[in-house]
Amino acid sequence: MIKTDVVIIGAGASGLMCAIEAGKRGRRVVLLDSANKAGKKILMSGGGRCNFTNYAIEADHYISQNPHFCKSALSRYTQWDFLSLIDKYKIPFHERSHGQLFCDKSAKDILNMLLAECDKSQVSIQLDCKIQEITHKSENEFQLTTDKETVHCSSIVVATGGLSIPKIGATAFGYQVAEQFNINIMPISAGLVPLTLQPEDKLKYSSLSGIAVRCLVSNEKQSFKENILFTHRGLSGPAILQISSYWKPGENIIINFLPDKDVIQSLKEKRKNKVKLQVKNILSEWLPKRLVEMLIDSHLLALSIQDISNKQIDKIAKHIEQWTIKPNATEGYRTAEVTLGGVDCSVISSKTMQCYSVPGLYFIGEVLDVTGWLGGYNFQWAWSSGWCAGQYV
Image (cartoon, helix red, strand yellow):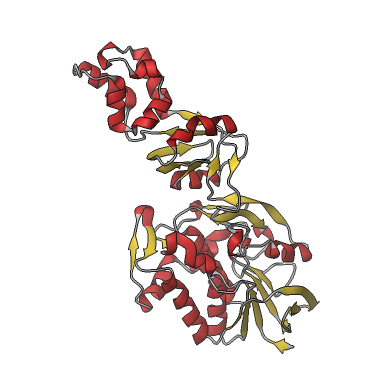
């Protein structure tokens, strides 16, 4: 049996940050994880380069049943604070579109930095550790029974993440802990995930697999202007991953394949300027030929632009600018980057991340009902929520 001040369950982004901050305060910290390596999701994120934060962190870029909950943590530990840590370790990074920040070399740079900080704070990290039971002995006194030993502590931090990417060890353990203590869980589902098509649409559009186009993808709740990618299962790419977090089964999505062009005006100008080309040749200058042939009726494509009517131009524009499709489902947690929903934020302090009804029990990171957009927002939530809990555990 060992006694410590804080046990953090989950050696991912939020758990490591919380451990660092609690350790800095002189708290004795034990960090437990069932995986054989810390920070597995960090290592695989961003194609191995880790999109660790974003220059434009705002509460509007997060989804939660309690939309104001994330504001406190994000304002107290900002992207600039994390960048100061990056600078301290001289980790080279670069900006991509929409303020996304990636390591120049490898996500290992981020993980090694966090582990070095844990080492400085004398955090004890125990991997390959399965928790068998958590017992609430009294206020601020907990006992954890693992497959290796029994641990007594005054604070437990649940930093277990969600269900996304089960192949790296994602489990429902964090939700089970919440349920044990009668804490409400908001409905969970896969987020930032590719969409699959209905069987007949999958067959119809299978020839488009591999085509990537910059589009405006919309539904009734939100819209995103980025690339989409046709796959052999359906639709992927940044714009699709983003809209997936706002999509519900049975809903349509609308895609504008030329969001920066007025198709009607452009075709009428071609006609007015006496351009002697078939419609398909003009459209193929703007979009991949295979996509054009799938979107527009062949008899329209064969017409000369000089022979086309205003009504036919309107029809072409509608197919390109308002292509409407009803996805079948998402690809699920197997390929999802995040889990939507989670521990109900209304029962958690936005200042400390402590559960109101169970003093000494904290929840941070993805296990909470806070989900960021694609682009470094979820990592920043991990850093911010972990940092906040670390000041109080």
